[in-house]
Length: 210
Image 1 (cartoon, rainbow, N blue to C red):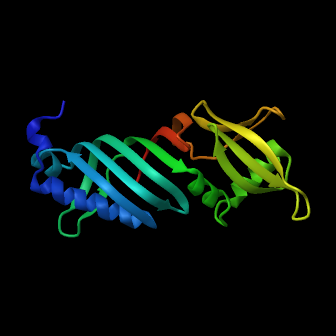
Image 2: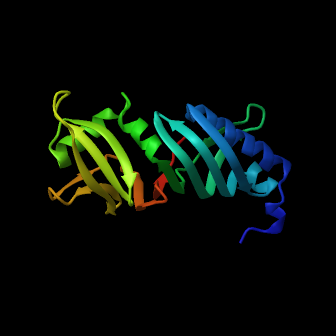
């Protein structure tokens, strides 16, 4: 349990929070950081140890992945922190727990973007037997996907389920009895994915090496 002394912000913890803020801004094209909490004593920070860090951010653009909200927690971090430049580096590869939430609008922008439309094309081909994904909506906790083979063909609409299996995200087309595994890095383990109030929520763990 984190002591009250650590919970009360010390100067080094505040400086370290600024370092984390700068690191996140550097890594993301856009980010609205709501909250950064670092739980560690000055002595621990000087030694390069952080007991716990909690980060909440909104409106994130990370490599053209648009996320509405991210909640992140990591424990027992080992760091190098330059007080003068406020630059932060991890000496270990800590495991983080995080929850990502994204809306229908964010998902649509990602899948139809130039950076990520290769995934939408794979989804269309593998589980819908179509060439092109035209639109995606969230309704009744399912995806409604519209696809077509070319611009002259009327598009088709399918209901798609989302689920997890062995740490991966799967899209399932029960009508055609087909599934598609969303390609993600091996270091990321998906614990749960569900749609609630028209928001896709992904709960996962991952190592980080920034």
